[in-house]
Amino acid sequence: MLTCLMCLAEIKEEGHYGLHPTCFRTWFEVESLFEFTSLVLKQGSKGEEPANQNSSFFQGQYKKYSADLNGCSYILKVRQTSAPELPELEFLCNQIAELIGLPVAKFYLLEMMGDRVFVTRNFIDRSEHASLSHIHTYFVDDAARTCDDIIRVIDEQTHRFTDVETFVMMCLFDSLIGNHDRHGRNLGIVTTAGGSRLAPIYDNPSVVGTHSGDWLKADIGLEGRIPTKDSKHPTISHYVKEFRRLGYHDQIEQFRKLAQLPRIENLISKSFCSNLMKAAITKMIQKNYKELEQTRI
Ligand SMILES: [Zn+2]
Image (cartoon, rainbow, N blue to C red; front, top):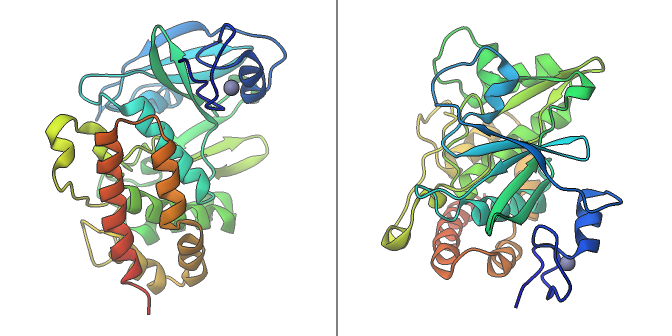
């Protein structure tokens, strides 16, 4: 039975990218069954800054394509042997991000070339004359920056408290799902003629996605990428301590309210990941959730 990747119901007629034609039109907000065109492989290597800063959006450890659909630009992430369930896992992690209210770039799971592909809307749309500056470009050297350094930059650049709140929630989210890859290029500020704002949160998979087979049964730990004042390798309790110190009590409580374990477990159970992957991400989240609960005063 063919299942629609959007509504999960059976596809009886001919599907379009693994979706019911009506689901495709609804999800992409288009009138017709458009196709992806102009697929270009974007394979940046880590650690080198390309000449065009917008193109560094594509850097990272996963194989990506850019593509167009009805005049909009998308990024396609395909399955790789080093991360065999990445499309399904990144889709799930973005659903969890959405559940806790993080502004993520619009995302999809589609069927292309006989396989599932994670697709995300490229929020740097050429037509809007927007540019993306990665957070590390606001610092003069490569030293790791703590949470308050980054908060200061976001505040100075965007003057939007909601962007600072998003950053706090993002750090807690990363810790909860086990995203260890929030390096200086995986957070950015978008500038348009209208001003600057924090970019939608992108590249959000859990580290369990880089494991497969029996490795998924291992007790995979996590150290956060963004240091706190007291820890170079923070876990979720360090972030809670840090954000309390900086006065973000309300945001921590908001996170607790939205990131309820049964709601997350429900998303995991309905996801397209293998049972082994579901068990691994559940174990990771349960462990971090327990640590989060222990930080209640
Ligand atoms: Zn459907």
